[in-house]
Length: 504
Image (cartoon, rainbow, N blue to C red; front, side):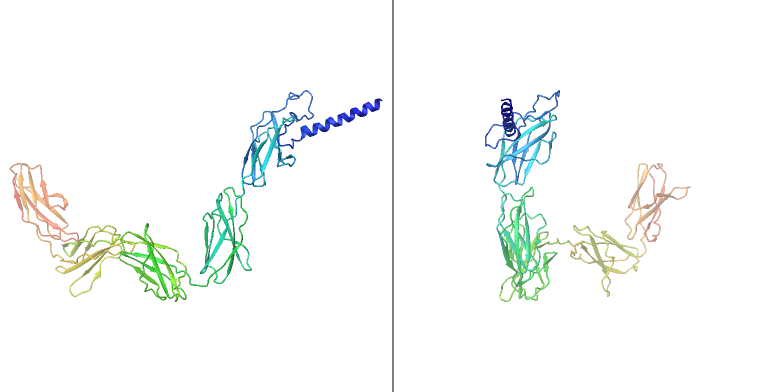
């Protein structure tokens, strides 16, 4: 009898242990079943946490593309966490393969099926190994997968234009191509956001195959599109235009296109429609076109294409543009003859960077005076024969190659000896004012005075450039005598003026 009682007791213990395993070790596989309120494990007697269960974490589930992120607040006393998951009628399984520590407050479950709903529960475990109650379930549905674009390929001369529908949720696209006996080659640089791409510089008659897929902002990729194919047409190449601006016009140049019978050049300005610029007379041998009567400082945009003998047009060139240059005004020359020289001056011209100055004499040719770097607005033509006549013209130039109109040409005669100045003196109070007419060819003047019983004394430091001088601080009733001569920079001097006196 004792053996039977012992056997029945052992059986009861086994049944109780099995129930504990089912209720406490694993979450319920039922959709809304309540979880056991503890998950007892062995722990050290006498521990302060011996009879303390950690709190259950409070879960939140956030869906993403192919993943769901589980987050929770830190549980006091927890040393790690268990995250469990199920889908549909599947049994619960542990989602975290590695240990989630006390510092962790989130877990991202990856590799999930788009559009599917996943259910999660969790529990905290403390240092004694005691487990919390199971958390309330949290659920989320994985974002729908981004779809593949629908691809279209249109063949042209030496190129294939590939286009596709814009895909909702796509941040960029990944486009690949291959041709017979070649490997797949990626065409984009990783930043393709448009819904079209031109595959250019291709061999005529060659078939190319394309596939594309959508990429989300976090790097998730769609399935590949259906493969499409296009065979490059045999036809005319696109001309390669170059635009060069000038005053009032822009000249387009290009290399002739093989088999071209003619060309078309089209133009537009910002905010206007494209229109044909040429008159239809460009032949297959043409390699330039000048678009004239244009507005200064205005930008014009151009594209061109070649035509075959049947009038069928090839592909458009890449667009080019240029801004019409602003014309430069003509300077106005002023000539000042001096002793053996002529000084030329003119006003600064807006937009000018340098000036070009030329001269000629009767019976001779025009000769350029400057060295090509004249940026000042004056020039001294020196070492001239006294009495010789010279004619001059000047024009403005810009660094962009704009040449202004020539000035009116004017002439002057190089002066001879400096004329003798003529003085006028006027006394007033205790001062005397000395004046004289400007002397042709003079650059400065030398003024001296004396009184009875004294030597000559120089006034003005010997470098007067004005034509008047006021002598102050004089003694009333004393007669002062003055004389003046003119100087040129080349060292020439005039004769002294007549002594002229005044008494304050």
